[in-house]
Length: 355
Figure (cartoon, rainbow, N blue to C red):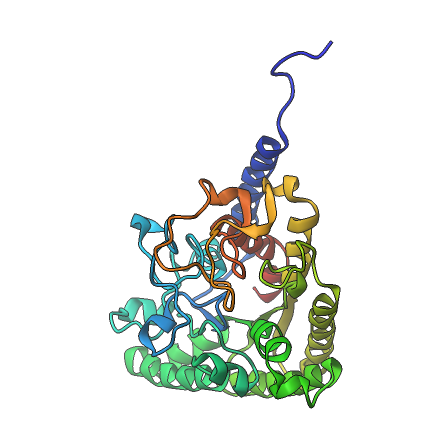
């Protein structure tokens, strides 16, 4: 005979496990690091863009509702989610600050400049054509902004302290999604002339050159966030199912990125560089949603999305009641809860190797 109330639902169990996981993460980080991280920097695309695109002329923005509906004071900030992004949870977890601000914010305070910023631009890629398609900041320009940042930092704290901050800071790069999901599979510019394998090699050559440039600017601790299973993004699914061809392209890029990391280690003395497995975590969300308290994996919380970009339509009232039950917020980007879980997993695993 079944006893009413004696069973814990999968979602409740998932919530309990997540709470335990989050507590362990903060405890683990606090015990593991002997020297505080002075600053955190993010480069790349929308997964790390905390609002830079608000300050450039592009349609690729998240500065309108329903984005930010669960953020502080329910304000849209340019973050393409219902709330915080991975960079925000990482700086919080490392004890640096509460949020990672965008570099282009004209109201950026000196204290925030000193402790790190995001240079990310939603819609960008390693391939210059990718950023041109979406009229956003190309990756090479983000590196140029970092050079400008370094000059500003020296002006604030002097050469010696600036070099200490830059060498002890942690740098994260999350890029490549738009090169495949937007550029290669939506337009003929590259797919007409490159096989997936050739395009991957082309992108990784660009990637390696930018890492070497960051190294020359005193970056010594770099985490590369790999590509998600692109064929499982709601905008790329076919009849609700993941598209294996696109997933294989993402996996091939990730394998190449790992090989690139191994090649760079002996070439750049003193460099700590790791891959953060974004791909595996999102697959786990999709295959085992109850484990994390999710219920919906194939669609985003934002029901009304643009068919081309996958972004929420401006001011749409058609969103889910509880975004925490969804892996995705729109048809491309994840919910705040998903980003929080991913950041905590990174903090417990790969980031420890950079401390």
